[in-house]
Length: 219
Image (cartoon, rainbow, N blue to C red; front, side, top):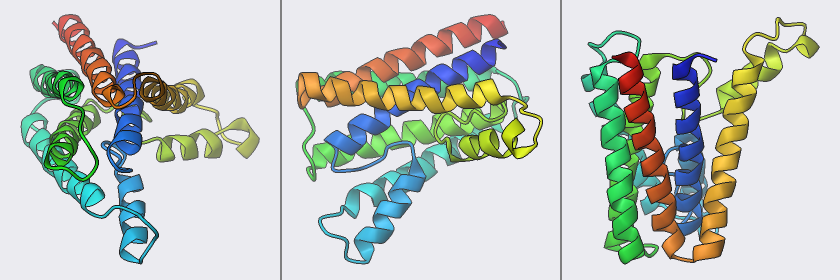
C-alpha cells in the first residue's frame, strides 16, 4: 500500500476522534465534517428543538478560513507530499495537541467563550489539513468526509457491474473514520469532560507522527 495512502488513512482516523469529541463535548458541533454542520444549522434555523446555531456557524466559517489558508500554502506545490504539506500538517497537529493539553487543564463547556474558541481554532486547523490532503490527491481519501468515498465504493463495485477499483482503500477510509469516532466517544465515556482535551491530544499527536513520517519519506 503506498505510503501516502497509509498516512492519509491515519489522518482519517484522527478526524473521527476530533468530530466525536466536538459533537459530544462541544454542543453538537462537527469540527471537520462540514456537511453535518450545514444540516444541523439548516434544521436549527427552521426551528429544530434545542439545535445549536452559533457553534456550527462558527465551525463552518473557521473551516472555510483554514481551507483558504491551506490553499494559499499548497496550491503552488506539486501534487505530492511537499514542504508545504509538511507545514500544513505540522500546524494542524500542533494546534490540536496544544488545544488538547489546554482543554484537559480547563475543560471547555458548551456555549462558553472558551468552548467557542476551541471549536473555532480547531476548525481552522482541520480546514488547513483538508486543503493539504486534497493537494496530495490520494484518490478517495480526503481525511474529512466519506460520503463520496462510500458512493464510489458502492457504485463502482462488482455488484453494480463496476470494476471494483480501489475498494480496499475506500472501505478502509469508512472504517477508520468510524473507528476514530468510536474511540473519541469512548474517551469521553471514560474520562468525562476531560475526554474532550484527551481526544484532541491523541488526534494531535497522531497528526504530528504522520507529519514526521511523511516528511522523512519525502526527503
